Length: 476
Ligand code: ZN
Ligand code: MN
Image 1 (cartoon, helix red, strand yellow):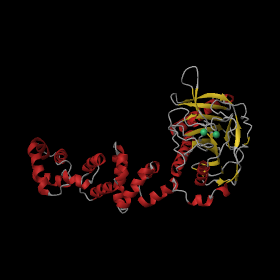
Image 2 (cartoon, rainbow, N blue to C red):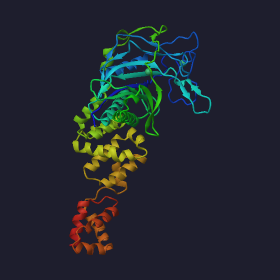
Image 3 (cartoon, helix red, strand yellow):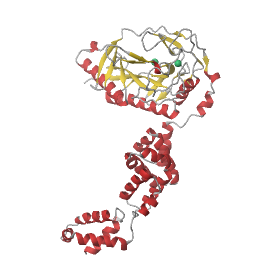
Image 4 (tube, rainbow, N blue to C red):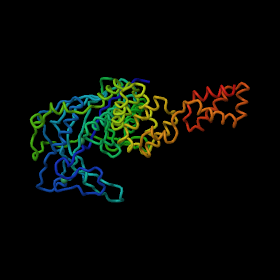
């Protein structure tokens, strides 16, 4: 098979988290379920109304630009992007064309071309039969658009598709860490479109296809992979001219793409500067250098710090990176444990496996760093067995409280006292003569079944080493 070079460019829209909409004082509430309540004459495009730009939204885009190392424009302006559709009441979208807020930057495997600010459209609902409804709550919500440079991969379709989905994930993390967007893909707060092509010649681009409806990171990966494979198959079977420039939708149920509309040439949106909004000089209106210094710790920096400070596995670090609240909990616990490596390792294991499976874990995490640290210390000092530790954690999460206190009350502390364990060992030996006989006949493994019974009888508190030692002594 010939070698093919996939080229991928990404366009990502993200709704920004602001109090109000982009150009009016309507509430920006993505969770509003009642249609058409967050609307006013401005976002409904009544004649004579004037837009006022939302400073918070501009600030959010500047933060994103700084976080990806982009250039913050000195001069910027808004433009009208003209098109007719029921979800855009003005007949144009206020967007940015020639002078985006951010130019350049880099994230994951992609160079960033630009990040600009625009307004979101209304929601059309086509599921009611032979008519459609429009909900304008989303119309005019601040929307950030990030465009990457096309990247040609010298690698397989799989690698290229994964790299695109990884970019989207990294962008989502940055938006979270900056606190500028919830960027929930399933809710449509972050929308990914991919422009892709394949070519046999690294220096010549193939025909470009745009994929939409990529509503999850998995869809981004699968949609791109599917489309790259489709194009390669057409080329291989001599049907290269069936690859046409078009927009294709990803059908998640069928796991395939379908043609939506053919693009003869790029749309003529008749962009022109928005006359109702002032031009902006960002370096005068904002303290850009100060904002740069005040950026929060970003995922890339946090990964390095976690690696250096805690020495835990990369997969574990990713769990904390993806769940900053969990990371916060872990960090406080580590501080309580004075960063002792062995204890940190125990803490991370229990936090990422046992605690994550429990129903009330979120409530627990809000104020139980001290109790959790105490539990880790008890495990480290061999005061409890791992079985008891798991049981204790369940109780702690359900009812709260000090694990040492709970363990003492319920008599679960590890018994290292031979006298106390001996009574249980003797009891189990007398109850299981046939197992004892098997052991004495030379099947040494039989001892493990007795150990299990003794530990169970002690509710997990008997120290297994001492149990084995006593069993061997007593059975001769
Ligand atoms: Zn409004
Ligand atoms: Mn856009």
